[in-house]
Amino acid sequence: MAGSLRAITYPLRMRNPGDNRVPTLLHSRPSWLVTQLATQVARVLTDAISTAEFRRDRYPPLAAVEEFGPASQAALGRRCRIDRSYVVEAVTELADAGLVLREADPADRRRNVITLTAEGRTKPAELREVLDRVRNEITAPLTARTCADVTAVARPASPAEPDYRLSGKIGRVDTVFGPTTRVMHAMEQL
Image (cartoon, rainbow, N blue to C red; front, side, top):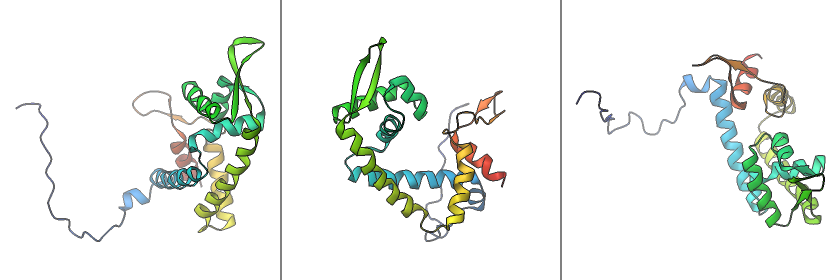
């Protein structure tokens, strides 16, 4: 049949099933290395934070309210670089857990202001201890100098730096790349 997809068949036997080397094309690319590292860190972090009976993706809004004080949901989304619909879900879960209060802003009833509860003021410190343990585990094989270098490369290439936008032409003009590509670009500059 013209234009139909054919099934691709693979050999039933691997050449060397015990060989788990990564192809040079992959491990020589910063983008692949950063993605692998991010996947591993996310896995370790998710496991560690779940032991504190918390979800990893709920920490950023909680941390933002702790550091910057009461904020609207829209402000939390901007500060944490997350979609507002996600903020609504996160704040609902945090409120259900008794960590934040969501109240109408007296200056603008259409907006909600998020504040920490007494329990919400203690949770970030508990989570920071978990984050410190994860950081120590992840960076154990690195020297202090290497850790500082990684931070120096990653910080300007991260969404934490709102003015940093790496753009290029891949399929269309002015594509804005995500954080992994920014880190890769920054690493290639070293």
